[in-house]
Amino acid sequence: MNKKLAWLLGIILLTLFILGIYNTYQRLELIESVEKTTLKGEAKKNPLYAARIFLHRMGIPASSKQSLQGLKELPDTNTLLIISSKRSTLSRQATNDLYAWVQSGGHLITRTNIDDDLSDFSDDPDVTYEEYGGEQPSSDPLQELLGVKIGERLSIYDKKNEFSLHLKGAVHPLKIEGESFYPITSMQGFSKTDEIIKIKKKAFILRRQIDKGMITLVADIEFMNNREIRKADHAEILWQLAHGLRAPDNVWLIHNDEVPPLWRLMWKHAWALIITLTLMLVLWLYRASHRFGPMIPKAAEDRRSLLEHINASGNFYWKHQQKAKLIASTREALNQRLAITNPGWKQLSDAEKITQLATRLERPQQEIQQLLFDPNVGLNKSKSDEFTQLVKQLEQVRTSL
Image (cartoon, rainbow, N blue to C red; front, top):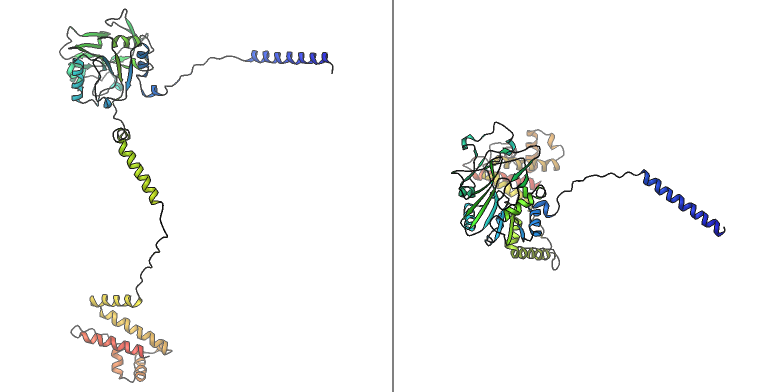
């Protein structure tokens, strides 16, 4: 094959290859699809993870705390405290300490609570709270200190599903999305210094100055959660609420009320003891799995002789006044011996047996009849020697045959 022919064949193959690619491309169709990504890592367990990242990127150091149970010491008053949990495990004393921290200049942002979660019945027109004056019952210690209660659930759903919040310090109304919330009401009326942010003329957020500090009570704090903070102006609402008192130096975010599991508490407070016990267990297992020297032979089990069993049986019958069984067994042993030494013995009658044995032993027939067949001999309680003498005679006859 010459050089020109090789070049021509190469050009043809390259042309066919390009045409094939173009034809395949023409047959392909690009389709766009939307896939919902699930939360992963810390965001899966921490609903305030995105809020923490947002605050951190905005220049405010923020950190997440696992639970109220781990909140042994409150931060300094320049730190903003955000609690999105129900505070159900927060004792009254701990609530008083938290309130005193606010009085000293701290800023707390938290949600409202009701004792009975009736959210599943929110669409039922028969659900009312007349016995509470149209308000949800609440024994929340913090709400009692603030003198507030929770009103009947208010549905705010409409086509736009967006509402404006007029926050003090914001340059324009901020949009928030939602469907319903429990309005905040006051037992004795709100004070003039309270800042009330309303939706449909119902209090959604309460900002109250407490001495040097501030408590911000939010009817629905879900807008801070991971999937909600990106909607509408939720992130800016969080920013404005965080600066309600002053620009914080730090932010603590708490989202959990649950008590840590027992193993975690044990490891946290007694890790040294756990490690020590584990090492002791390993050493004991190692020691128990090794033996030194040959195994000790097992001692042979003691076995009683047949005479001991017979003696024990005789003592048992004697103690229980069963002489007749002892006499019967002795006579049976004599009859078995006679059946061996005298063929046809079992076919003889009692009289024949008496005659034959009396002749053989050279004893009176009356004595032989008493030895073999008299049912009353040896059983007289007043004559204990008679029983002994009878058994002795029967045994002498048996051994003499």
